Length: 439
Image (cartoon, rainbow, N blue to C red):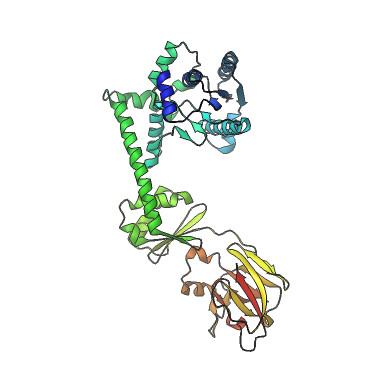
């Protein structure tokens, strides 16, 4: 096994003898085997152990065992004492999840402090299979088949090609001492149920069941990588990204094979789940225009044959613009304030505004538009509700909430980014202009 281990870490370039790593060790069979292999491969390492204080004397026994082993090997050992039950209660999570968060957070903090080159973990082939089945039980997509990576960020798992039986044989042949965690035999946890009941029954179906499972997972992982590449190409071709919004034609999604998966992979980074992706697809199929979907950070609207994605606008507190101000800042950008002679050529772009300065009274106010707000759009004679104006302008629902107005003595002079009010426009009699220019 030593030769196979050294060949593996060299071929995959996952460990470097010129660097020093942090070995995460519980004192159990797997991590003690890994410690022995690292030593024989001449890979320098320090040891990290978390005493979760969950098994009373047994937890302290694990710690003392590792301290003695570290001393005998001339290795530096770091021990963290965790209040696991308290941590779990405060966050309303299971003790297993709490222990996972505690150890990974501490491992990374310790690695950074010690300037070490990676965190070496003792996960092996059987752990990989258990992880994949746990992912499937949680309703994962194809990425759940990937399981654990041999190297991801600072985490290194050099034992993934080796099975539990192979590790056990190596430990026994080399008379390596290790500690048994009594909780590993309990079937209260899903992983232990898989390990002791479900997977042994599955392996008993055929002599090559385990090998075939691993081969199948490997092919599915390769298929997933191919899909990821195809998805990125599809996204770049079909999804438009401009003005803080992403848009996708429903015609494009409806004629695409695997439409629900495409939607999920597009929307997942913005907090949407697979169930929402399926609901969105059904909305497109049914033509329910105007329907709105929400995640913690984003809104998605189906409107006039398009899916429109945008972030949820943050609350905007009104601001005051004094007469001597030279600029103001909005979430959508910075605006320069210029005062010009009335004979200047007018800037008619909707992002900017040229107003008759002498018709305005300072300080001006900028706020988010409110229901009931009205103004006379440039070129019209009658007032119009802002809500109706935005509908006429075909402003997407999620963008409407972020629209702001500029007011002078409570009267709307500009729907910012869309239209100035007719009363504030420049005329032949205008002597001074207030030019609000977006940078």
